[in-house]
Every structure is written in structure tokens, then in C-alpha cells.
Amino acid sequence: MKWNTFVAALGLFAPTSALLRFGCARLTVQRLDPLVNPGMIPSTHLHQIIGGNSFNVSMDPKTHDLPTLSTCTSCQFTEDFSNYWTAVLFFRARNGSFKRVPQRAQSGMEGTQGGMVVYYMSDALFDTAQKSKVTAFKPGFRMLVGEVNYRNREQARDFRQLTYTCMENEGTRAPESLDFPKKPCPVGIMANHRFPTCWDGVNLDSPNHRDHVAYPETGTFESGGNCPSTHPVKIPQLLLETVWDTKAFNNKADWPEDGSQPFVWSSGDKTGYSTHADYVFGWKDDSLQRAMDGHTYVSAPMLKTQSIAQQNKCTVPDMVKENIDDWLPKLPGDVVVV
Ligand SMILES: *[C@@H]1O[C@H](CO)[C@@H](O)[C@H](O)[C@H]1NC(C)=O
Ligand SMILES: *[C@@H]1O[C@H](CO)[C@@H](O)[C@H](O)[C@H]1NC(C)=O
Image (cartoon, rainbow, N blue to C red; front, side, top):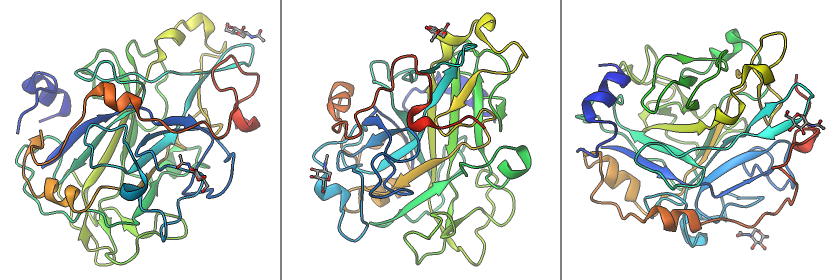
């Protein structure tokens, strides 16, 4: 069953029966990246970040215990103090000025300020049984998917399933493209970040933050491919969905005269192929493993939840203090579009 058919069958996200799906409000939007640029303030490009409020300029895995240091999370499940982040989408006007594109809450999560929807799955999204055994991430685990310097389709193929969906309506989940949609998307552009699902079972991180995880040997996570012998441990499929609310920028008269699309990542990419996302695990105790072992679907009675109003209240101070919201002559950090 295709995801859009599946959404229709469910009555668009009606909670049913161990797939976790939950909303997280924005924790902060600023130029920090404790994974790739630890200690750098500001980091190279702007990120939008969700999760626990222990997020900081540096998060040394040896000393920074997210569940202990956080006092709140912007996610619905209150035991999840992880941090998740992606680049930020900007609109580039004909005069060359940039405007940050807002993020929108998905259906059923109205009122959530910014943020993303997070999934942890033991089997493909459409498989309501979710019966495969997966090993939850361990404290100190982090990973990155995508490559900020990529600019073409051949490169982008290194990462399976980093995609965009041009949303015609709230329920649109297909087709997905590897580059930015070429036409205006009435409801917005959904960026989908699916992380690899096989782990070497030893390293919590690696120098490029990618080599300790891998894709299945054949096929995809969705098709049930086995993990390679180098990375034998099946971990949950982590998926982040961000809806970029492009509605204010859909007038073709404001688009480039050569007919190309006007959106760029904060990292300076106008193709979309550099899409990337970062994850720093921070679930409290064994809460994630317990949830993944629960074989429930969307709802997770074993986990504690909070209201959207409480999620919205969890933020971190602006440590960089730069203007990101006006029409800007340059991208934050003077990042050049190439
Ligand atoms: C970030 O780290 C600095 C230096 O260790 C610390 O003073 C500050 O309280 C931290 N901020 C947050 C939000 O935890
Ligand atoms: C550039 O264009 C945008 C969109 O039309 C407009 O809002 C902005 O004021 C313009 N900036 C300059 C410097 O002309």
C-alpha cells in the first residue's frame, strides 16, 4: 500500500495501534552545530533544531548527558531529550534578497510552533504490524545523513531516501523527488530525512558521523533488506518530516525569470541535493527500547506525553544573536549560493 493510500485508509493520522510518530516544536533556530562544528559560535550555516533544551554550542559525548542536563523537551514524548536538526529553507527574491521560509505544523498537530514530525519505525511505514526487533540507540550515539557539498543527482544517490514532497494538499505524500520541486507547491514543501538503519554495533559516532551506520545490503529498509555484515545491528528507521510553508512565496511572478525555482538551503544550495540532517540520541533510560518493543502503532501508551502548549514553551537562549527574520541581503553567515 502506498503511503498516500495508507493515509486515506487511516483517516489521516487517526491514532491507531512499535511505530512512533510524534510532533516536536522548534527548540531554536540559530547558527549552531554541536555535531559538525562543536565549539564554533556561530557555525557555518543556519539550522532549525528540536528536542531537549540541553542543546548547546558543544555537546561532548563523554560529559554531556542529554536526559540529565535537559529540563524540558519540545517533543510530545517527554522522555525524548534527543536533538534533531536540519538546514533552514530560504526564498531568494528576484532582487537577490533572502527571506526565511516558516515551518508549519502537520494536520492533527495544529498550534505546534515550527518544528518537525519524528518517526521511529521497526518496519516500513505502511506495515502496521511493526514486528521486527530493532536495537535502540545507546547514550552518546549520534549520526548525520546527507552531504552539505553535494549538488547533483549522482552524488545524492549515496543517500537513499532523502527527498522532497510537493504538497498539493495536507495529505500529499507522493511523489518524492531528490531535488527541490520545480513548480509552486500549494500547501508547502515537505523535506523527508530518513537515516540509515544498520549500525556497526560498536561505535557511537565516527569521524564523518556517517561510517558507523549503513544502509541494508540490498533493497531498502522498506523492502526489508538485511543489514550488511560490517553493520549487523538493525536500528530503528528514524524519519524527520519538515513542512516548509512556502505559501507566501508561490507567486510565479516573484520566481526567477529563467523559470528555475527560488528556494535555497541556508547552506547555499539551490538544487536541494545537499539536504542533510543530524541526530544526537537523548532518550531517558531505556524508554526508546521499551517503546520499540511495544509493537504498537503511532500511539505509545508506555511513554509519557505533554501538551502542544508545553512543547512550545521549551526553547533555548539565542546564543548567536543575529537577524534571521527580515529580508536579508545575504544568507546568515554570508553563505554564498553555489
Ligand atoms: C551552554 O554551555 C555554556 C557553557 O558551558 C553554559 O554556561 C550554558 O548554561 C549552556 N546553555 C544551556 C542552555 O544549557
Ligand atoms: C526585494 O524583494 C522583496 C520581495 O519582493 C522585497 O520585499 C524587498 O523589500 C526587496 N529588497 C530590496 C532591498 O529591494
